[in-house]
Image (cartoon, rainbow, N blue to C red):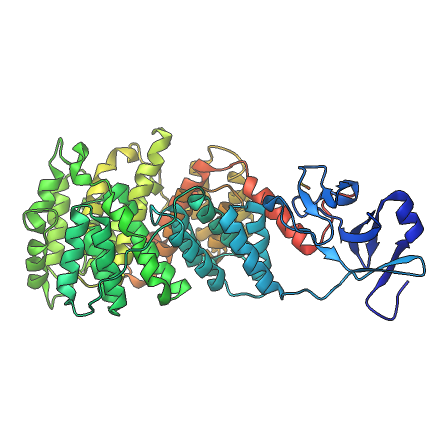
Length: 600
Ligand code: FES
């Protein structure tokens, strides 16, 4: 029965007193009502953990205990004793003339955006997957721009992980980069994935205590850069952090900050299988989403990975049977940390317009490291920008993934993956700074492509544009593609379907959305997420490259399809997973929508 105010009749007091509890639906809201210690209490009947009916719980000494996973709630206010379960919503009650009245739509103390922002912080602090799922879904559904929670997660990840930038923050940056490429529901999955991975990275870790910037703001940039590189070289984290924070505090430009970081990140080749430079690139990209005011802590978080990095010039595979490091040092200026040789080549090429010569692409994928280094050095001498060269090398690296032979050891998927994402990060670095140091990243990536050559034996085929036009409806091809991720081992079929979709006139944006959905419904690992982001980035950047008018340059259509084929094959090799995160996400979405999960 409706009343003149917001309260609605729910049950007679006598009936409730006799039964002790009851379950009612008031204006569509499922409620559990309790008569306990002489008081009437009303809570949402769906346990905030996973929806079990709380009317079937136990009430004792003012505490309501859910019978499913035994989460406990203070009955009067709904706050939980078990943060993993989240607080339960309570509702105002009144007793009038022997009838219990409930207000099913009480005014909330805080607007939804504020409420969910606070739950996001709680979820990060306690590493609570379900709370994070509800908070990220709630925030985006409340109309909050993804940049706000992205900044919150970024701050949390840099504050509470002494070991600095890691996979969680990289996932955050990667998924922020592809937000526009995803379907609206998958944007929520992306934010949830990033939040739970950052929270997981920080759980149990000591927090980070900042080293302050130097008091002076007068240090010339070149000197600061030299100090920073020297500190990183001797693995002095404190000194390096003070230099880096000083550069930020002195309002050095984004170009200069990039020059500083990428110089140190390329002073030794292929640091930690490429992860360090990839972290650095993602940190700069994250600032584009979260805002430059986060630069101080975000960039300082790179110091630990830089000073603890594994240096590939110390690996035997870079020394024997061919001394690859020596080949690089000849070009760089006698040592891997030098740039004089490169500077001379750049000076020679000044004013020239480089275009890839005949056979350039083949040389990058061939098995002669001397020829590869010579081809790159000649290109610099002829005026090739670091960005143009990086673009060619990242295409070669994507080709290695697209052609990865499935007879190889499974773990070697990550060998070609690391080279691809490293080359993609180098490409990103070259787009941020014209400094000479990132050229070294291009050469190092090309050497890594060379080292991966046996993983393309025999090479998986990549169809040429137009070769796979079956005339089918592109939508049907996409459905088949999604199905390949439901079963193991459909690696080559996934690659073929990408080619078929494009050849049948399918919209690449739909393909990106579908691949993004395939990724985010899985318990996708750090690498799968990186791989997808790099592929999407390279697809988009292909438009900026020459369209085959130069003898050695790659046809644009081919340049675009290779990374998407590569990432579809990589995904097919790693999917399906158990999809546990998706289960949590689905429950959270249904709870947020007010749906009953389990009928009592
Ligand atoms: S504790 Fe209630 S559903 Fe898990």
